[in-house]
Amino acid sequence: MNQLDPSLKRLLKWSRSASAASVSAPTPEEAPFGFAGRVVASAWVTRAQPATTLVQELQRTAWGIACVSLALLLCGALVLLSQGGPPAPEADISSALNFVANNFLH
Image 1 (cartoon, helix red, strand yellow):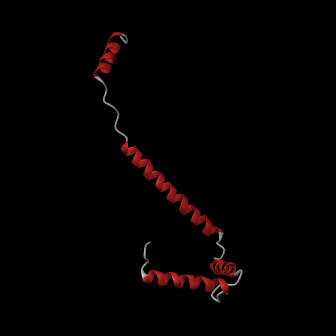
Image 2 (image 1 turned 90 degrees about the horizontal axis):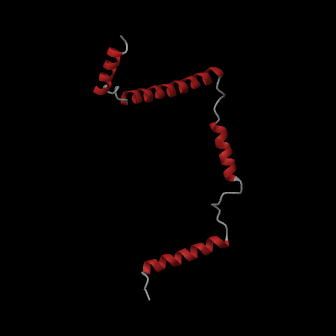
Image 3 (image 1 turned 180 degrees about the vertical axis):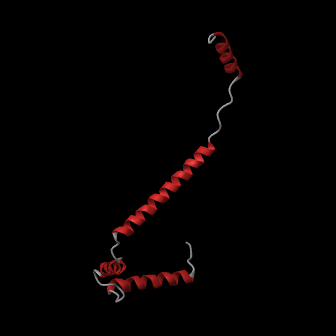
């Protein structure tokens, strides 16, 4: 069988004694029932901001719309710049147009 390291055995023994002690009696470090809810509620109350006015709300909305519009313009400019120019006319098409212009339009 494998022999465990003596320091590991000592740690396992301490772990068993610590788990047995914690099961037998509750520690005074435990928070009372509902404590977390009270902490969250008090943090929510302290973080409450004063009500914003209509002008402040409109200004924040206008800034948001302006930023979205600017991003849309930049994306449109990038798409426009990435587009290639018109294709060069083919030699066959121009000769066909010359034939039509010379024979049928006169």
